[in-house]
Image 1 (cartoon, rainbow, N blue to C red):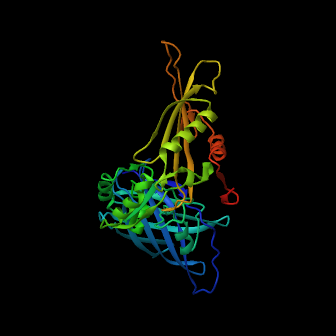
Image 2: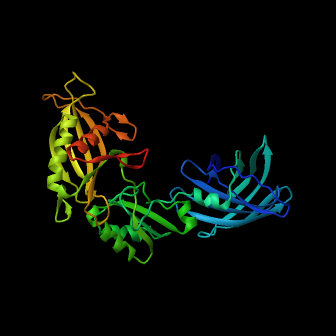
Image 3: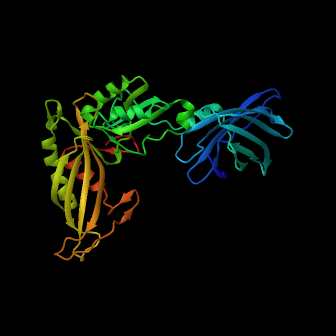
Length: 387
């Protein structure tokens, strides 16, 4: 296993160390050692200092020995050995030998590290310029935690269709088996891979999409699983393109009247985009209203080409179990360019846009039109409230 160093750091504010010679200060740094293009070791070094002198340190290293292999971790006490701090130990899971040594110096008022690391039979130089420093509290506050709210006051900070489940490290396969029975939509970017933060904390959060009308039941069922620590709503609401409307005209038996909402929303979307409706359906798994329409290409006029447009909209109660207001979120608007002129047609490769493939279509005009038609209000990001 060949290892090389990658100068990738998590930046913290510089910590000024002051006080008496006996004062103890913990400083956290976090450089990354890269084994290959797909393998890495994430290191956290905690130094115990008396004034400017480093008396001892602790290495917390998380790594993969093989590409896509299981995460492992070693915690090693580092003690002074001449001008260096060094130590050795074995990983917690596979008992892989780990050796580490380094020295620190200031160059142009900037803290730098140099040394070496060995994991199993592989070794590499360890060099870190622009080392960042923080207190333990600052470090802990900097760690990302996926949103999980068990009892949200509203669906502004979290989404009504996103559920987050926090489970013990190593138990994601059992959670996935449970989700197979729940009719949910998984996204590979939202927690399917357990990372170093999960290994260190002992828990891991998986987020997934479920129909809002079933979210509460899925959360309650997940909480009954033996290895689940917490479950609630997660994700993030698309507030940039959200409309808040009085619920009364759009409810049936206390729930959104989807047939009525579909008719009104479809009419607005078709008018704004100047397209012909092709289909409209509520996704049984996610609760989204998926509208498909076609229009003459507005991006390539005169070429007799067609834009096939898909608009995904969510319309749900603003608060859990509350029927005062609905919120209509325009979750996505995307289109592809196709040739539908005559029998002889050309194939068109997708136009690449930031965030995906397709023709860019601004969702703001749809949002504003929905607000006018449904007699609703839009979200003011500056004031963080409804207009």
